[in-house]
Length: 141
Image 1 (cartoon, one colour):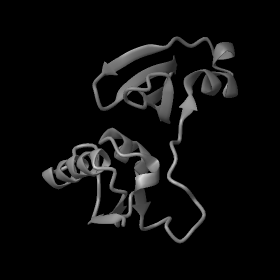
Image 2 (cartoon, helix red, strand yellow):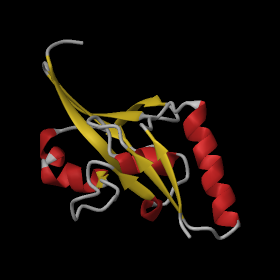
Image 3 (cartoon, one colour):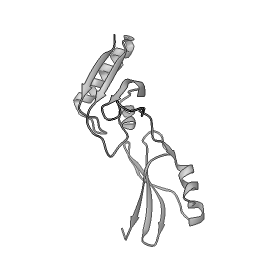
Image 4 (spheres, helix red, strand yellow):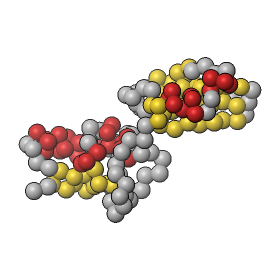
């Protein structure tokens, strides 16, 4: 028997419903009862794997409505900072890495500032050298 749990969404600042569901997942794992957690909200800005991993779910426990009927599996979208630096030739552009926000949820690193151009990398929490997404800003700040 597999227990199926259905919820609309999940986020970084999850509600009590998501925390109760995560507690339910822990309890079912301890009892060795297989469980699946279904999320039906359309998530644009994040990878659902980062959100579910943040609450302690394993990838094989998650069913996301928007990829259930495809062959796309729930997986992290890790991009190592060192590979990113190499791929865009940051070493040739005279940059320096500087952490500017050491928060628990998001850490940002200033990769390059040259004139009116700045590049930031938002890092994956608890996986310090992996990029969630880069941002290029134009103009003064």
